[in-house]
Length: 110
Image (cartoon, rainbow, N blue to C red; front, top):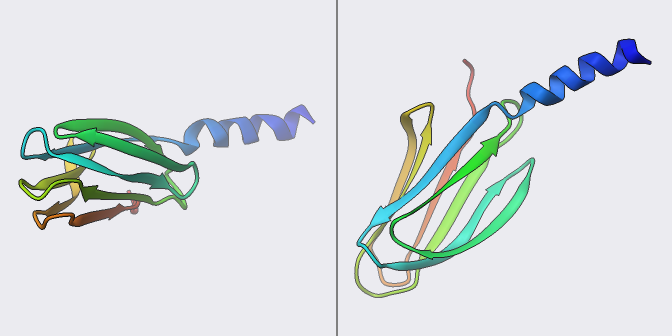
């Protein structure tokens, strides 16, 4: 039993090796609401104002990060940035009143 458990524990410990940073920038004070979802960990509802940021663990295999936010005002703009290991991997922007921005990122081959 121990012989099979140790490899499983090592796999589980290494599975979430991306600590992704989701940043929301744009016109300061712009309100927004939406979701941050990973296919392996589920969905988190957010309701905030610019600027904002979250750290989201993403699995290295078979996971996808989807950020979808809607502006709650007519003025200003929103930008969503997905940062991984110090570099921007995905970006989206919306300026339309009540507009929605959707950004999708998934780990690629190393």
